[in-house]
Image (cartoon, rainbow, N blue to C red; front, side):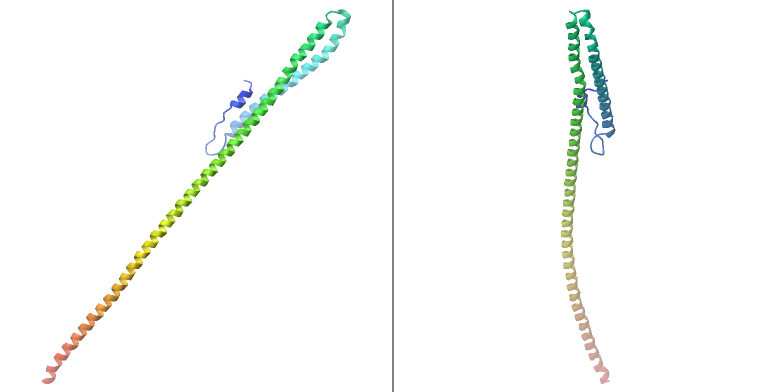
Amino acid sequence: MPLTPEDVVTKQFQHVRFKEGFDPDEVDDFLDEIVVEWRKTIAENEELKAKLAAYESGETPAEAPTPAAEPEPEPVVSEVPAAEPAAEAPTSAAPAAASAGIIELAQRLHDEHVAEGKAQKEKLISEAQTEADTILNDARTKARDEMTRLESERGTLEARISELRQFERDYRVQLRGFIEEKLRDLDVAGTSGATPISAS
């Protein structure tokens, strides 16, 4: 089936997963089709040019003997070749115009795909940057919360240590008082017990 400019305009490529852009193999295959059709068009154009040149070169010898044999058919013979090349000229120009149109459409399609790829790249970079900023902000918030918790826990532990030191001081004072009281009791008991012994 011949490739038309509409085929180039309406061609849809499949998006590739896990990377940007379109499937390179599919794009290459489509460009190969364009090249084949373009070469066909160029070959047809060259063939038509060759036919036109051959026709024009064959037209001159045909005109020379015609006036000697028949004077009246000369206008008919001269008009037919003049009309046919005029009709063939647009035909030979049409493939060239079609080729130029195909090239222009292919270039426009390529530019659109490149622009779409760039836009997709910018979008992915922007999304990645936004995600990275969100992760960093979350990490900073968690770090601040953890530092606040640790500061609060340190304050609680320092208060508990102060209470325990105060308890130790109070306990030592009470223990010393208790021991001193017991020592006094022992001294009193020893003094009261020694007097009767010395009297006897």
